[in-house]
Length: 202
Image 1 (cartoon, rainbow, N blue to C red):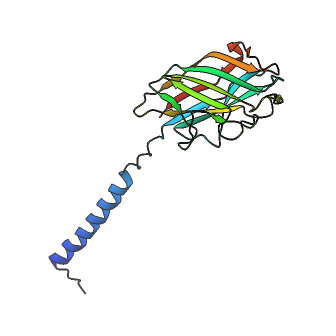
Image 2: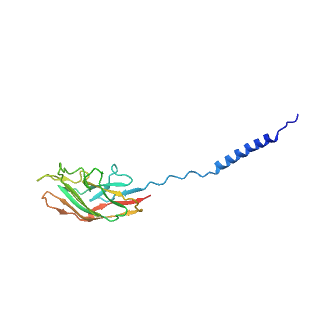
Image 3: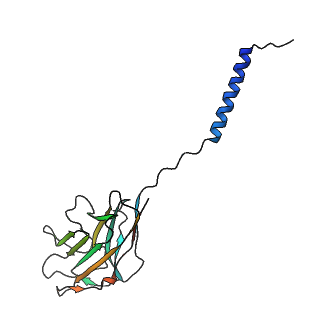
């Protein structure tokens, strides 16, 4: 018995096979989707030295575009009732001084060592261009000294500027003083006050 096929049936079957073959070929050669763009990030590596005053990253308060730094007395074994410092930000095209939180009234936040009291608090910060001046300490007359190694002494922050180029950020410590029990200031060699490495990359 001979089987008979009409021309439309044959063309229809051939068309189905051709369509299937084309579909399989295109899916096999389609390139994988492009990876998502990298997130712009401020990176800060803590200084590796000890026996100095160090600015270390506060992980809980920092983010991809905000770096919060805690000032700590790393092995200083020093007691005082207050301190002050002046720091210059050298790369103003990448970051700028910021408040730890937009709700803060100053460009500094008290740490966990000094009792600055209620308003008016014994803490002040002055921003002059790219230079930050800070004083923080115990409130009152004849207040006891505290161990500077007991925790963060103060907190400062830097925020990424809009349209910032990739690069590294450096700082200059212009002055650093502590206030010992005599209530007079004692200068600290600025080489003993260190920052880590701050950089911006995408």
